[in-house]
Length: 226
Ligand code: SF4
Image (cartoon, rainbow, N blue to C red; front, top):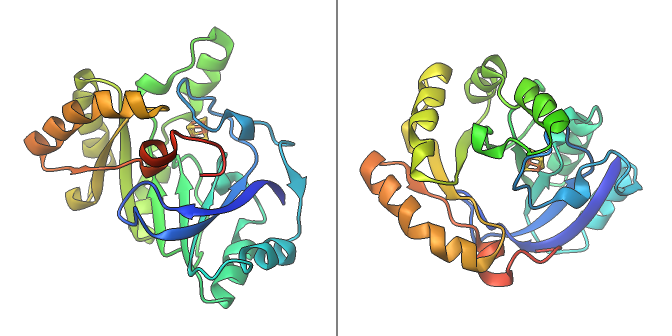
């Protein structure tokens, strides 16, 4: 598998925020979101080739049960089920972080952390914007992911104007457990996070969705490897 980086940190986002976790970042994502904070992992070749056994060996260096498979977009990797299976054989708790654009069946994933992309993520470059718009939201895939896996739905919020689109997306997916919906400030720096958090907190209070922290931004200002 093409692995961009493996590192040990705290889970920064979602219901497991604060849990010491090993992150496996796989290379490659077609979406090219405007505010993506891991652009260095976009291209398929952005990393080194490791076997599943080598990845598991690297993960085992740290005394940690929680493993996060992230990207890039991990659900597009054909070797993902084998990696999940081997990590589970080592009794790991597995979170997969995905934009929800591809479905993979029957993995022993403990938490599918899905972040559907809204129109606020569309790139400025017209050629990339067209690819992004075509791929960013697949309602059928989202329906299958929430039906088949334990999940959380994290929406990245750039402004108050995003709320109607979030509500429409949730309604279109259908059968969403609203207690699993989280709103997360769009922020790639600590200053941006602190500036946008009060707005998102108010949106959470008015909707009953949960506020999603970004500890990697708050604590380390989004340095690589955190
Ligand atoms: S889906 Fe995630 S990894 Fe891919 S471009 Fe968007 S923010 Fe970056």
